[in-house]
Image (cartoon, rainbow over all chains, first blue to last red; front, top):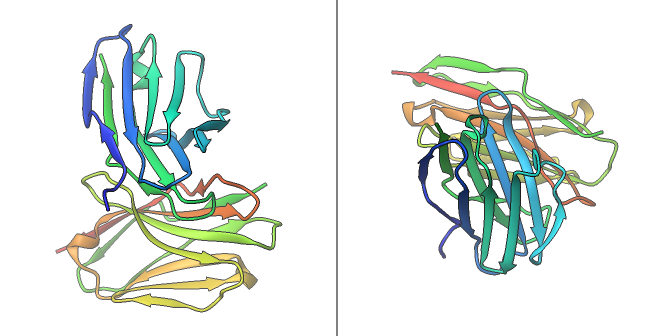
Length: 113
Length: 114
């Protein structure tokens, strides 16, 4: 069974540009989570979806961040406009139900210059 | 409020030594789940184990073992005869039965020296 697939693996872009991160969860998983990891703040939950519906976006840092899940097999996290402080590793994870183990993608390493 | 504390920020041991990573959690709920994840230098997060609050049996998987003690709210992880490949950041985490989110500890960075 394929795991969680994230793309791109690395992204380097200039400040002010729009960035779109993509995630394909494990088939059959009803929950999808977006995390950000930095040295300073550790692993932060940004937003999560249940059955394609956003349930909690309280971790989204500001309006420049948005996430969508148009169907059960695809989600995007968008940053517009991007800033250098958005540089981090962004992880997507999915799980069958909330308290089941979350399975993580390999992450997207984002660098905003 | 729920909380996970991994007091050991960084640990270094020599290969073949045993090492224990501490995890202390806080919750008032009676039904909850505890996890350990491993993040090797390559960066991915790998699920290691899940325990529910009603199962205090210790778990052993090869060189890895986990000790869950509700009396001390701890879920410690021991690596026996450590190997260089065990070098990673290890995260302890907690989720409640009534919740969907996992609360992660800050992680313990483990260095296994050859």
